[in-house]
Image 1: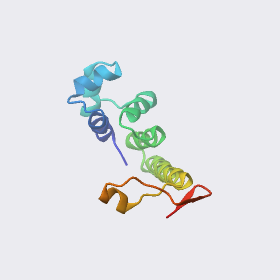
Image 2 (image 1 turned 30 degrees about the vertical axis):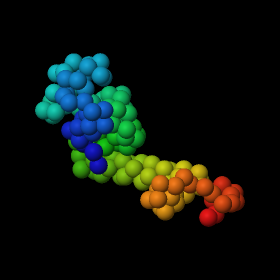
Image 3 (image 1 turned 90 degrees about the vertical axis):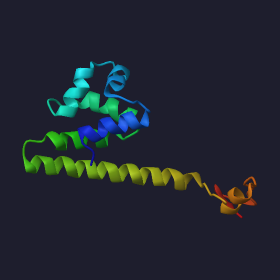
Length: 130
């Protein structure tokens, strides 16, 4: 699960942004808004969470659910949002795996080690047989 602090740091890292000030400028907000997030005086609303998630290359739905869990007022509500976030995280990972598998991509470890180009011998339904 990601929290507000982790989200901000992930966005800065992914965008190679050195400071909260630079992140604020990229988002078109005041630096005091970002410092307010850091200090816990405020939390990103859903739209800001989505925007920061995209900068961090994270699933916006997952991030929004995590931040709802972070600001939940009761343990029961927090548990609901955490469950939603976990399901979204697993669904995203499963979806990525399906895309990779459906593409029928294969890697020849010998080719990269030897500097050779990959050359499939035969193709059957998108899968290469070597």
